[in-house]
Image (cartoon, rainbow, N blue to C red):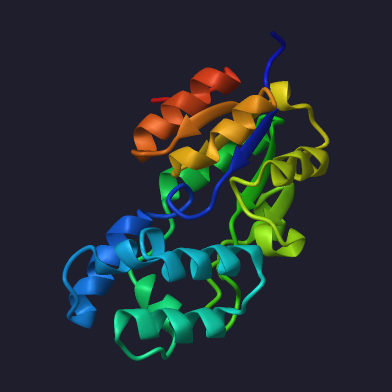
Length: 209
């Protein structure tokens, strides 16, 4: 197999700190039992549908805020921003992505959308400056793990699947990539994620001491 020359990165939980950890902090601040928010968006039928529609861009963030807050029984004002209050950049993975790009690897962002107003989760991450291509799911009215959107991402990367590595923190988002020949990494711990990126790309991505 020839050397892989493309790196595709999810956003939340890869370039950032843990999203589930944010949800736990939100539950605490909102006076909800721990696990309430994640349960509503992952298990409650209406909550699941609302979150999927937000990711596909078929409802606005403000609509999602209002309708999901009703399921939670809390105020809807800037709900998403409050949920993600503890979300911060993951410097080590961002630095590894920069190192990959400096070594000639094409680096792309492949993220399910959360809308941009009133809370812009991507603000301050300098996508246009630091990455070669960016796909935000709402632009195509699809979301991971819809298979077609992975093919669009490869088209944007201008690379075949066999030339790419894909990193995501959600297991269900990996199989459609694997079907296209993309090597996948399930992001759990930043150091482990970077080690797997180095192994698959065949280059060092951290400063050599």
